[in-house]
Amino acid sequence: MPAFADTPHRQDDAAPRRVSDGTLADRVYGVFIQRILTGAFRQGQRLPTEHELAGAFGVSRPVLRQAMERLKAEGLVRSRQGSGSIIAAVPDRAAIGITRGGSVAEVQRCFEFRLALEPEAAAHAALARSADDLERIAAALALLDEATRHHLHREDADFTFHLAIAAATGNGYFHGALNGLRDDIAAGMKLHGLSVSGPRPALEEVYAEHRAIFTAIRAGDAPGARAAMAAHLVSSHDRLFAGANISLRRA
Image (cartoon, rainbow, N blue to C red; front, side):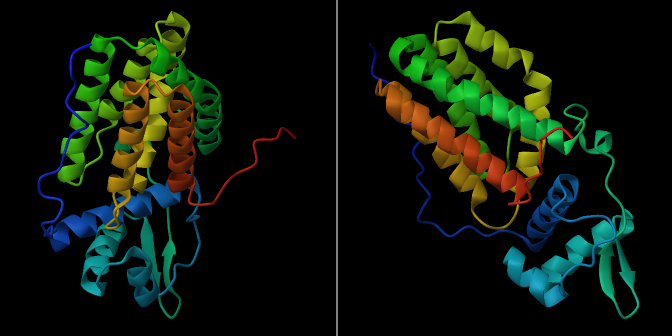
């Protein structure tokens, strides 16, 4: 087997990163959208004070105000005299590119199914992967690394990474099942991308989780690959829903 480059190394990890106020405001805006879509912020809910929100997002009050002004301009947040700000509306899912997985419950059900499917796929991939499979997984990981450096989340590279692992099992049922869920998974990944677009290092955490999966598969460590994939999916679910789980039980 040819020698593979280690997972992408970062030459500039020690260098401080300068992020513009505009970029931070965009990220706060993105997290607000994700919180509204998943129900962590509900229509009509009164928001915490500006000081409390700035502290929760880890940004300055001027940065928070930029994000809030955009939300107000889009009619999603409204100020009430003497009552602070409230969530005034829920954004149109289609307008932000979420056209499948129509409800939060469906996104959560998709996560449940992926938790039953993908950890086992990762374990099988660790035992069956070829040199070409590793190349494909590493290429997708490199795209995720580059996006993370630019403080972005690439849903296309994320899905490609997971699909390449399914293909590496050598079992077409794993690949077919995941590929068949492409649109539904894309809806969850779009929301997840919004949830990790905040000013805190969530993107770095997501990249590290993917790197851990790849490392275990490359090492032929089936239990490690299974555990790494399960940990990643659970963490993604928790980041997305921010503890606001909804019941999936039928009435």
